[in-house]
Length: 230
Image 1: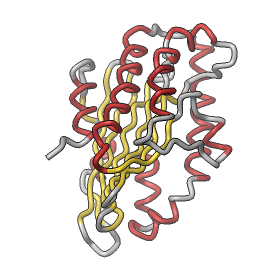
Image 2 (image 1 turned 120 degrees about the vertical axis):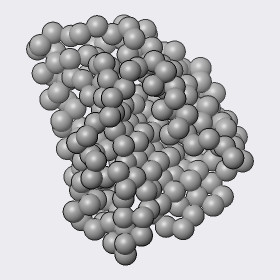
Image 3 (image 1 turned 90 degrees about the vertical axis):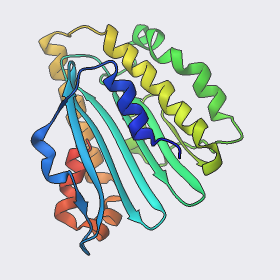
Image 4 (image 1 turned 45 degrees about the horizontal axis):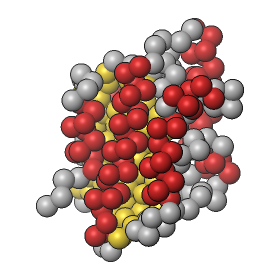
C-alpha cells in the first residue's frame, strides 16, 4: 500500500527540523462527525523558525478522504507558508500546493530568483503534463494570496506517484528557504504578520467548502478545525 503523502512529508520535514508536539490542539486528536462516527484526526508540531506544522486527515464521506498539510513559519523570518490540500476519491485525486509568500514579491525579484525560480522547470513541465489537469483558481482572494507557482489540478489515482512527486518538489524548496533565511528586522516581521493575518482572515471568511464541512462536523467543530489548519 502506498504511503500517505502526509506521512512522507512528515518524515522529510522531521529529518531536517527537530519537532515538538503542540498541545494546543489536543482536543482535535480524534475528530468525530455529527453522527458520532470517528472520521479522522489532527496533529501539530513546532520547531526552529516554525510556528506550526499541522497535519489534518479526515473522511468527508465514503470514498472521500482529505489530507491537509501546512507549514507556518514564525513571522520573524521571510519564509513562505507551505500549503497542501489533497482529496483522494474513488477514481481521482484533487489537489493544490503552493509556497504562499510571506511578503509582497513584486519588489523582491532577488528572492524570486534565489528560490522560486528553482521550481520553474518543474512547474512548466507539470502544468502541461497529460496526467494533470492544471487550472487557475476562479477565486480572486486565492489568486492575490498565492505565489506565481500555485498549482491546482486533479489526477487519476494511477498517477498518484506524480502528484506526490510534485508535493516533494515544493517541500524541498521550502526546506531550502527554511535553512538559508535569516531573521528579519522587527519592522519587517510586523509587515509579515500583518499580511499573514489578512490572508488567514480571507481564508476563514470566504472558503466556500466550509458549508460542506459544517454539514459533517457542525459549525463549532468546523470553526475549530479551520483555525487549527491555518
